[in-house]
Length: 209
Image (cartoon, rainbow, N blue to C red; front, side, top):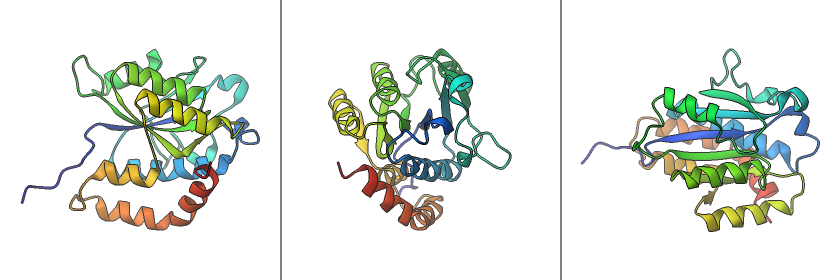
């Protein structure tokens, strides 16, 4: 039997604009944060990089503190960039990926999984830009939202039609692994079990539309 290997070879997590000032405005924001926290924990287990952005943080504030991005004992991002563009696919993000050896001419396409806000603006434009550059994009239905809930299914339908894979956090984690024989499988299984209640709540909040 061949040695087990992962299904996704170049995964990276994009965390889009999950800032404190958006908390009162975004539909089911706690559900988005819960899914993001699960993916961030998985990034430590499976050792895939994290890219995060803020939108004009001078006006709109810092990333939500419970995500613990770039804090002692928290998740260290590859880049935690501020932007005015709606898309995360900025020159600063590309440069950080190039410096980390994740992005090179003729290199392996990225396998980007996206969580954050808003589904129809920053998440959508990030996804479209990544697809244009021939990267594979997973948008998590239990990890994205907008101020108006009606925007969400329209945005997801559009992105699916453009070639993005709209899926869920648990499905993506198992696709990322691809084989129960990999060393990290037990820890990911424990993470899934430990977060089953919050996963159910996020699914019920964001995936019923």
